[in-house]
Length: 295
Length: 340
Image (cartoon, rainbow over all chains, first blue to last red; front, top):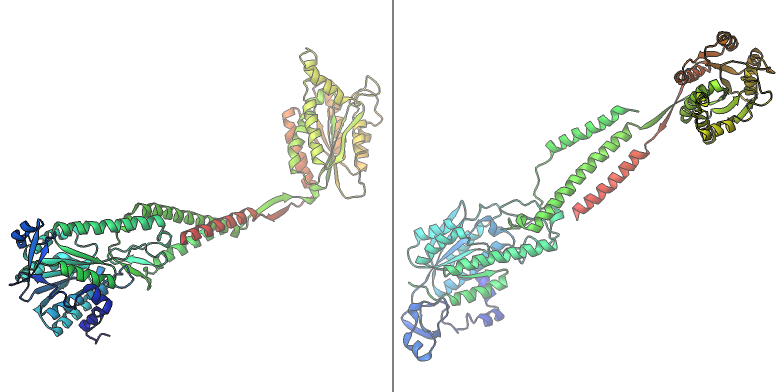
């Protein structure tokens, strides 16, 4: 398993006919999922919230009565930065029962796969409270494979706590070329403490966030659960009562909402995924929405 | 019985608890734990908190119950017993209360009856009779161990006999009470009008009250009189004393008389008769002393009967077993609640 190419696995996954049809990803319906500010005019499109106001074609807008933007085919290679949260929270359980790190890696694989096909470069900044790993931007399969393995090796229950600010700071310090920063973290982040760093990051780079869902601690009354950061030691007597489930669900939803509000405030596209299937669709969707990457 | 066992059990449990506390292994993480992230909010949820406080309460209850079972076990280990100092010999006593109910003696009679009322609950097989006499005898109740009847009769006797004779002179008595007294004394003043306190006859009658001559029982008469004889008794006091002695009956004499010109001689005759037959003679000048006299009599009986005191030990674990069962049941229920 470990010997097989990660990108090959992703391709196998994305090549499933249903997925392909759903996304139109490899069918040529889109020449590039990364449209941007190239020389070649691509298409006219209705303005949507999040689009760059400077892209608005005022003449077309005046004639149609709706705000219309002009899209261009992006003509240069895109620099991408995978910003991966490798705190121990990422080694915990996802809503579908798998490890969150598996979903995170899958998201990274999809990014790498698409980037390789496009000929884009991908850099990696993976870190937490104590560690930080930085791999400079390069293209090519072997680079991507190495990068993914490196990230994979960092996910562990014994890992230090999560600290997104260190990752953000590292990117701010080292990456001067405008890039697409794909932050892979979990549903509870970014928290308000990350907002300033995110804001600064946003001024220099395009940012999108992939949030991996967390399993609710009350999902299964029979399983012994514990938190990776704070030992809970919940006695059996306290597990998963109905009112507790309701309150926990409500709390988790509210926290997701808070994170989403923060991201919206900072103009950052985000997607939350609870399972691999959901992740594919979400990734395709968000990449299509990601239009404003400047050189 | 082994009072120390309670403390030993408590100490052992305490020591084991302390050892267990210090020797407890650091909490090992269960292998099959499902790790989740960002769940530290869970203990802050209100429903979790209420449930946690309930959980702690249950834990406290379990702790208290465990303490309770420990104490109950300790009590059981210390072998709870009921100790009864009982003499089989004393239990075979037949006692006849032979009371002179001439006017001057009523007060003393009341005291004797009262004292026996108090002694009654400790009787186990003793038989008592009550005979009152003046010029003739009346058997209030014969020898019996029907303590319910004995108690009723003694209580009534104590009530009725508690009559102040002096109140007759100044008409301050309660006529109803006086009527009841007269009723009660009917039959003790028969025959000639001028006869009273025929001690010999009264004592002889009492001596004849003992039945079951074949069985080995201790027989005693407690005679209370002032020995002021008026009239012609069939038995003189010495003759009656001889009759009593012949029948193997112990005589306990209580003398209680006002000082008169003849009282010293009367007391001496009484004393001589009683003591010549190895009886015990008491001069109870004061009605309050009567109860002490009765105690001395019973003590003397114990000595006379060579009643080696048997300590009857009865195990009484029932209460602690009940505690233990209830506590354990509660414990099981509580633990079951804690586990589900």
